[in-house]
Amino acid sequence: MRTPVNPFKPTAGGEPPLLIGRAKVIRDFEKGLDNGVGAPGRIMLITGARGTGKTVMLTVFGDKARARKWDVIEETASEGLCERLVNELRSKDHMLDRFSIKPAVSFAGTSISLGEAELSPKRMPETLRKAMSARLDSLAKHHAGLLITIDETQAAQRSDMIALATAIQHQIRERRDIAIAFAGLPQMISDLFNDEVITFLRRAKTNVLTDVPVSDVQDAFGTTFRTSGMTIDGEQLRTAAKATCGYPYMIQLVGYHIWDAADMRDSDIVTDGDIADGLAEARIDLDNAVCVPELHGLSHNDRAYLEAMTASDGPSSTSDIARRMGKTNNYAATYRKRLLDAYIIRETERGEVDFAVPFLREYLRRQQQR
Image (cartoon, rainbow, N blue to C red; front, side):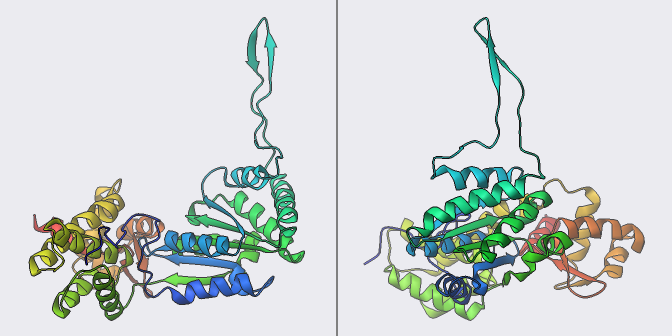
């Protein structure tokens, strides 16, 4: 009997029912929690291209920690990260619940602000460490620990990362039950973690989320469709799995739209028409959610560089790209650097680059044909 709820969940950051190829990463994290202070999985770095499921992994980690009665603080790197962490660490202890203080005085019934007073960045490591210690003291009474997850780490300010690394390092030295997991883009994360002041974070156990083997996708599709009460044949499964190229976000989109196409007919049998319609809808969603935003704000020459790369089915040499653009190597190198910094392209070997955003090559090719 067909279930009334679509089993596929292609929403950003939400935990999908399919965690294909991620079992070892999850196991490493769980072992880190269970094996105690000093276990490698207690400091973990998750990297990968956009859409490979980094945020999902942080969500799963949080669930695993909560199942062990740990407290979990989930944050996204942006300005004021450590201030928010201090507030969250103190909130359950009824301590100061605002990091910034806005003193004011009243005169003739009117309140006049004296401006905002904030602790200086120099004091932040000490402040964060004390707040963290107080929270861990409270948790220790209940034999529980603390997990902190930081998403989009490439956007973190250097001062915040220094404060966070300093505070965590002290807790580990004091053999506290604490774990931290970072997620972010590979190249930007690499730059951040190579900072000499933040060398402690190099001890993080690194997991690079890559594409899932298509054969595994096919098996997972078969299990998920059949468990939800849908009949789908082997050839349809092969077509659907191949269309994903093993890209985790596309896996969810393809599964979701094929299931939905059959459901719209109120049928529990997937037809070839459902496959075709589902794949077309999945491509539209992927273009709108991934490809279009990546290209937004790029200059004409940035885009020309990317379009020159589409002539290759794989990595392109930088000299070939310049030739296709009709420009000198030095001229093209300016846009190569800009696109590398934005992690839209990546270096494969010396003198070669490829797309870092899955399916962007195919999207640009379709745009060129219009």
